[in-house]
Image 1: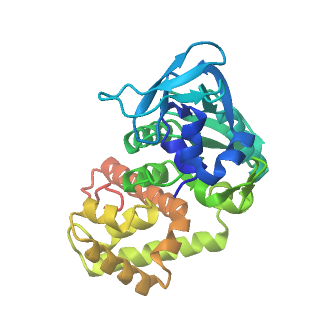
Image 2 (image 1 turned 180 degrees about the vertical axis):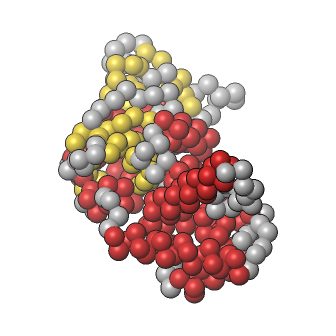
Length: 329
């Protein structure tokens, strides 16, 4: 697929000549120029050729510019360029950030882009939920940026990226622990010919899970589901891929079935079997249970606190205790 969003992740530094932008964005090029691409004051030093090589740009005068093949042996004719064609064009992160906020009808808040390529672009709801944008050129850079952001913002945030191709199980786990939501621009926005963006869902619908307090019904549902999984786990004690461990990794931390299998040291089919057991017992699909991840974490925290209090009370009375404060595992 050729579009603006894929082009952003394929262009290191988000700067190149118009010919490369045109090739990488395909039918989105005109709209991208209208909205987010702009010429810089920097002259380009090289230019792509149809044969696949890169030509050196030679400036004989302001209007006499040619791209010359430097291959050995020489293969291609010189390419005459206009001053615009020989100028570097860049993505305006600020314009893109404002366009995202405008489409979602949320407050725009611009911040400096950090070395990992992330920046806050807006905030949503009364709690001012931070909305960030990351444009990374590879999976390693993406993972490093997510890890740093999740460590710094542990109380929830929204993260946008051009596509979801770098979002692996480990990144999903990092975001789940930070109570963060991830959305890719490719799936959630349409680039209009005018250069504006159209959001396919309203911000209130898109970010509902991260902005509202759970209702009493949702809290009860989460409590019942958690108790059912613990009971299932007690009925079928197993090492590795126990029902409770699979439930926690897949439903609470948001890992994929493949990533869950890796963490449990078993096959994907084993994980799918455990998830089927959980669904049959609770009556809800494991995917739908992910919507209650925040409540599940709160339940686990309360159980940990309760066990810790019992241990302290017994210690104060010099009474031995068999309890161990190990959380759900």
